[in-house]
Each structure stands twice: as C-alpha cells, then as structure tokens.
Image 1 (cartoon, one colour):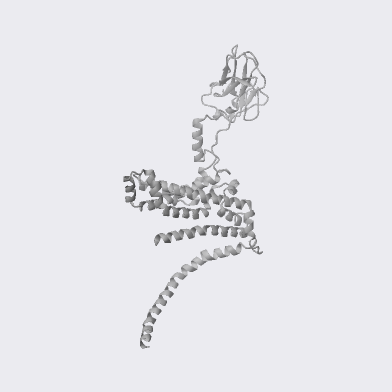
Image 2 (cartoon, rainbow, N blue to C red):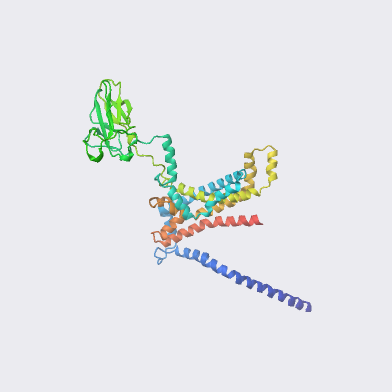
Length: 443
C-alpha cells in the first residue's frame, strides 16, 4: 500500500507537467486554429448552406441549385473546359518538365537555362494574362504571334497587289466588290482599253509607279492600261487617263474567250499591259480577284475554336519552370551507378530513359502531375483576362463561371455557392492523394 502511494505521488508531478505542456500547446495553436476556422472552415460551411437557398437567399431550394448546374448549358460548357484543362495542361507540363530536366543535365549553362525557364513563375497571372492578351491580338501590328505568322505566310505567298481597289461605277469595268472585274464590252484584237480603278490610297501606290500610259495594241493583240483613275486635286475626267494619274504596276490581267483564259499579262510600272498573238474573235478582259484579296491577317487565336488552347499555352509558359525544377531535383537524386551500369551493358540513352529514368522518377512525376491538377482546377486569372468578352463563355472554367454567376452580372449567389462546393469536392480528392504521397515518402 505504501509503495502504491509513493508511485502515485511520483506520477502526479509528471502528470501535472504533461498537462501544463498540453495547455501551453493549446495556447500556441489556438490562434492558428481560429484563423483557419475563420478563413477556411467558416467559408466552406457558409458556402454549402448558401447553396441550399435561391438567388435572394430567402427561399430554401435544397438541391435545386445543384440540379440547375446539370441543366445550364453555360455551366456544362465550363465543366467541359475544366475537364480539358485537367487532362491537357498537367500532362503537357509534366512531359515538358521531364524533357527539359533531362536536357538541362547535358547543357553547359544549365543553371542559367533553368533560371530563364523559371522566371515566369515570378510573374503574376494578372501580368501574364495581359502580356498574352496582347500577344494573341488579331491585328499583326499589335499581336506579336500574328506578326510572325503573317511574316512567314507572306514570305512564301505574295500578298494581293491592291486589296482596297474598286471600280468606278458606269465605266469600262463591272463586277462585285472584291473582284473579279471584267470589261463591260467584248473587244477584238487591235483595240486598246483603259481600266481605271479607285479606292487606292496614295501611299499604297508603289514607289516605282510611273504616270499612266496605255500600250499600243498591235494588229494581233489587245493593249491597255490599269491605272488609278483619280487625278491630284480631284480634277480630270473619269474613264480617261489624265495628267498626274499613276499606273498600277503588278496587276494581273486576263484575256477571256468563251469562258476560258486565252492569255495573261502583268501591268508594268506605268500600268500598261499588252496581249499578243491573239486569234481573231471577241475577248473580255478580266482583273482576277487575286488582285484584290484582303491581306492575310494570321490566326484568330482568341476566336471560339482556339481560345481555350491559347490560354492553356499561356499557362504552360508560366508553369513549365516549376515542373522542370521539381523533376530536376528528383532526377538529381537518382543513383548514378544504375545509369552507368546500364550504359556498360550496352543500353542506349533512349532505353535508359524509358526503362530506368522514368520508372525511378515515377513518384516525383506523380506528385508534380497531381499538384498541377489541383492548380488547374482553380485557374481563374488567365481565363478571365485573356478571353475577350464575346468568347468568354467559350473559355469559361468552373472558377470563372462561379465568379460570373455570383458577382459578374448573374447575381445568383445560390448557384455560385453550389459551383464552389462542386469545385471543392473535385479538388479535395487530389489534395488528399498528394498529402498521402508526401507522408509515404517521408516515412
């Protein structure tokens, strides 16, 4: 009995000390718990409760908002776009990160290369969105991507000579806007014709252009001139070549007989052209539509068909460095003796990559992929900034749809709260999976 009392007396100070430590731990942890509850737990609980009421928040609708999600075409489109993001963006980023991490091991300036690729991570999504919104502009004079595309296109294909040129009503030519334009009357060899056009700005006339002058037809040919039928100061007679009027060089002219092109000529510096060796008969002269085709404007990056891939491209620019650095850290931890042994056994670099490097990196690749899945599920800034208003609905993801429904004009915070709960339910499994991976790797 005395021994028991002695043991209890010795245990009491230890128990009291343990209780004091627990109370002290609670004192230190309590502020963090209160902050977590205020910033995380309360908003989640409030959003769930709010999702059970209508737009005004006064009428209980139960699961009505969740039912509305599957019946709203715009929301279904946002879910489809979110699925595209989840499948495409993490897969491309993980693949690019792996490829770049392997390549940087063979680059002399690997540190500088990694730093350059990682720099976009220092740029906010707001700034990145503005940069890419400008880069994707349709106008080649503003959008750098279309400036490159148009430059490459025009290198291999000549642009139209005079895209703004048009005919003057009641003169020698007839046709609809944009061409082709044909002479109103047929003519036989030995005659000449003036083909006057308007709508060409003075600075659009080539510097090599000379005063307009018609070519002599010859006995077996047809001659003429293609010119800007507008004299300086507005003087002159329509349909006639007046002093000061310039020829339009480089214009393609066709002689058409019985619906077929019998001959083709190109106007010279003074706008003159000449067909020779024509058989006797009647011909119609035609200016093909290629002379007046609108200039190539590049790719409509922000159109309905390409807006989502374009925004994913901007996301890749920002996050590729992140994937590369994480995978590179895992690559540095791979035992080099396994790689050297494979090389000594005659394995090629491709075989080493597929059968040794990738399997050993599988845990790191999984963590990177799941982390990126969580991130793309919450993407908002890039989609909201880059997508123009007319195609915003085509680019929406769940996060942007939730904001637009709640605050962007929809004013339906019941449906917006339901979307936020759905988004949370989609993100939580990936977060739990990632946490378990981290715990297993740390054990």
